[in-house]
Length: 237
Image 1 (cartoon, one colour):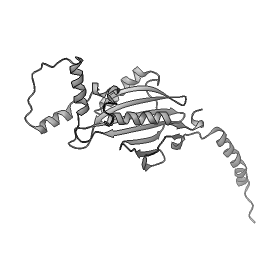
Image 2 (cartoon, one colour):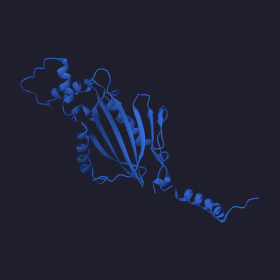
Image 3 (cartoon, rainbow, N blue to C red):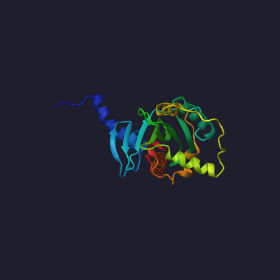
Image 4 (tube, rainbow, N blue to C red):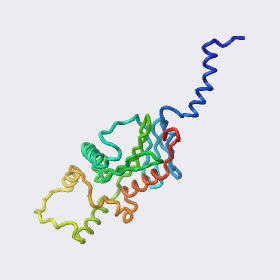
């Protein structure tokens, strides 16, 4: 019978010790499964080592990702500096930051942001809304995205809120000379080229009034993610 070499014998002796140490102190690097979400009712449509994605009953998309550690030019508790940074970064790619807040998830500092972009579908005037949670841990960064796109007739929320704001006197009437545009195509092109910005209708106070709007949906979804997220003990130490 072949006898194990001295090197193999040493390996066989140390393997139980390493397994014990791993169970005691955890893995040095986090794994995607170290962050668990409440996925009841969601449908998984993508799964990789560092990324998983689901669709919700509201047809929003939720993506969980694990990144390498990131060094931001701001502290997580400095919301003013974080807001300035993300406003600039989002504007570079044609989007708008709607809000940014600090979170505490099981004792871990996190950041939550809500953004809007133009729907990249050719010819669409709809908006694409994204809510994100960034959760830094030792040796990694978890990111949770909730995403939904505006479909069908667009601009209803904006129009209703603008009418309310005008009636309440919160928006002064515009006396500028009207600009005449000679075709629908020219109008749509002008709308798509205009700079995105945060509007009164983007305020969360209107989410209940427009519960089915994609912005309301991503806010609800990301709030549930924050509420039910469960981190493995070893990444919280």
